[in-house]
Image (tube, rainbow, N blue to C red):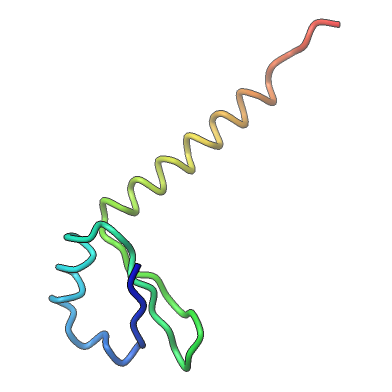
Amino acid sequence: MKILPIKDLRNTNEISKTVKEENDPIFITKNGYADMVIMSQNVFDNIAKNKCDSKTISIKKDNIKYKQ
């Protein structure tokens, strides 16, 4: 995990290379506080897929009818 101040966003090529190689998001701070997260498309797709899978499991679980 990498944390950078917002002023370091000038070198976008290096940031893009880092998120792709490390396969980890970079957290951006502004005035010492969390402000943004930058991640590769691959990491985002994995997060979105896992979130979608969790919702599907939850919906299926809610639709189960239990015999009494």
